[in-house]
Image 1: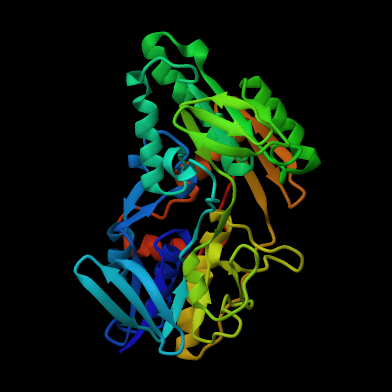
Image 2: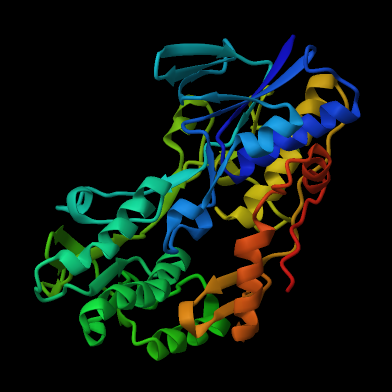
Length: 405
């Protein structure tokens, strides 16, 4: 029996598994001939783009709900050593280590937040990078009411004013106010964004950045630009300039890199730790390895590389899963192309901003854009949850998500 192993249960990994299962089904290949195995550290698919929201416990789906109907085997464990010569993956499980041989591998281990060597960062800062971190932040916010009344009790400092940082900050005002209201301290709620460059939303461009800046002002979110953090403690944040911000809540959102597991692959990587792939998402130089999502340096068209977003991870996963089966069976795969690019930035109670193209030209804003964002967050990025194999297979053929209202 041959085996396709997929590492990672996020957007790219889940869709790789479903798409591979569909392709095998369509080719009438039985599971006794080729099995698809997905390895993940826990038995859940986490809707990571929504982890900045409250109640993150509602933002996970049992992997069994989408893998069992399509016949994908799930192994719970932490992927360790990946040996591309022996074509095996070591998986650390609760009861020991499993060495899993593969004929083809799809590496979809995602990315993780970059945490520099900064005093107090690991001990006192929060993030929304993982489900556990999002839950920790949610518990902290809900527990603020029980804290002593000190300066900065209802102040949150968000470090990093890129897409994720802005979405966290925009949501944080309402989240803090809900707790502060219980002791009539809503007026003390303060949210501050700290950004090391000269402007917030540095990647949004000249057309969209003024809209983001206006939205932040309308929500009374303060911005500190050309500023970096030198240390974090239990009662606040100290800035490189010597300034001090009293705050019981510090949230780190300053940069991500591909999973460190990528180090096991003997190929050159970009500055974000991603591996170059060909048009079929096969890792260049490693014939039996495909990669998708945040670990793939993939070109969406002739000029642009895919970003670390679910917008790119989902179609890449679908194509990688399709192509890994094609490669195993010796038939031609399909090239990855994704020439349409949009951005939909959540701006909390202000609404949202929907842009079109790599120049991020504003198309919708405010309440109109919020409807699109809610549709994306609550429907578009979810796999079908009907439990029906046919629905999952059909969705795996829809390469470009529909982000319309």
